Length: 462
Image (cartoon, rainbow, N blue to C red; front, side, top):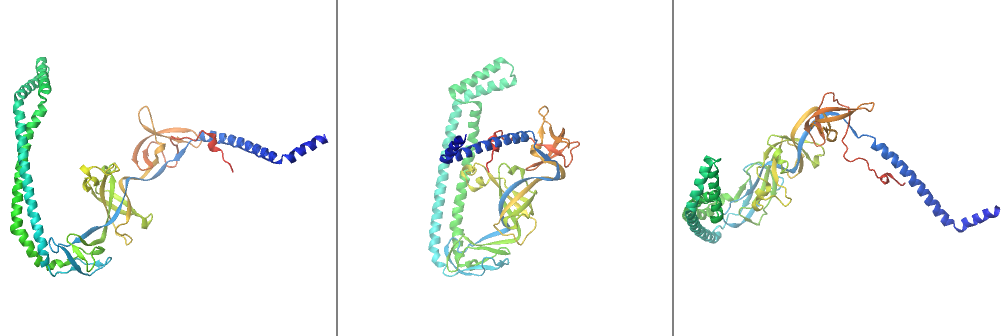
């Protein structure tokens, strides 16, 4: 016996690493077996435990969330008509800077009013271009008249060639409508219709459409003739009055060298620099009356039909944290941004979802509000105060009659179904009404995704 123990001891000394590895593997196997058994117990417990919620009594709102930009209610981009069609007038003096408050009528920017004569040659060149463009436009209109007249002649010839067959078909059709149950009238109409379609390639509708189209083409000719007359009158007016008057204005434009503030407010941008030239029509400066603010936002086509003017809104800004400000929808666009912005044939943007502009007027001003802030608003579509509400997934549907009910779990674990009617729905809660349903009751939720049945999901290694 002693010899045997010495052999065993010798074996352990020689194979100490193997022994350690076997011991570790054995421990892992025992731990995994223990974890699997615990996981099975947990799985059975969770699968037998219902998912519940509590009946609440609260204020509930149905809303649409939008994101936009805060702007002043009255903002003006000021341009100048100095020099008429001339460009390159020098900026002489800027009297205010960005951020300054300016009263309406104050002179903000002054232009150099000297040496307008050097622009006369440029003005004359522009007149020559305008006159030539008028001539080309009149020539194009005359060609359209000729083409349209040719179309009328071709269409009338086509109508004349098929008139006899059309008259027969129309007569058969009218008599068939008088007595649709007469087989002989029905057969005649169907026969005439088949002949006109197969041999002459027309129906009553296509014939009458081409006939009516001639009137449209004739109206187009009248329109083109009116456009020609208008273009000729405009050309004569420009040559005899406008062009002469504009030349005179060059020498009378001293008043235009002073650009005034059209409203009282703060200078937001200054787009010119002293000493540089100014191109007529460009923005000189931007001014905003910040006594009132408005949020300009876009809403996708799925929600726009829900929004109308007069609806209340709650607005938040990044700089004001969770504080909300009251607003009211004052404008809802009838056309999508894509159709207004000039996408081909009014198609929506590349996302495939059309968006519409809405405006929310802020009811109160706040010193922290700044033009250009990102605003997150909830447009309140409907609201209810102090009503009984439950989460969406607690309302079940009766498959027999389509009615709704919730399952109440009593203190002793028994369950009872209470029939309910749905009311206002928010993002998570739905208002419900049912006999015996009270605040604080425990109700069962509808579980679509139960606990995992894979025990390996419950195995953890520390």
